[in-house]
Image (cartoon, rainbow, N blue to C red; front, side):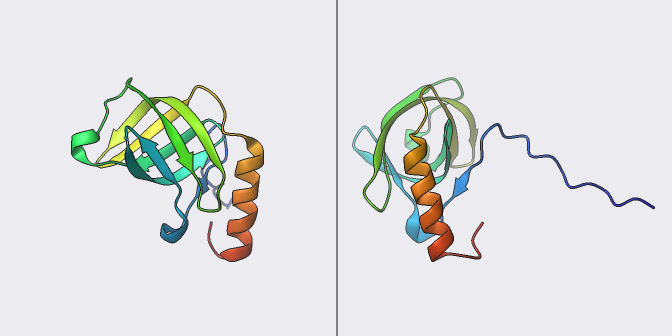
Length: 113
């Protein structure tokens, strides 16, 4: 009897999930929104219903990480589910920022994945 293989990851890029206290903010039109996770070419954030864009809309702003790094982003909404919005970014978030965040999270939260 063979062991079933684990489900395949369908994402193109690895995502970094953030603990609640470490979440970056995405500032869009003077609104600070909590970022749930990021990758080189995407991110997911929490929005209020009055600011919720629809699929295909463009969102532009600045992601500010807790430890000081920031990146300008612009992306297309690919999914809206409840109060979560997923963006596909037109330009990559610098890999150096993401790797520094990932290292910090692994050191500070060794059991967090």
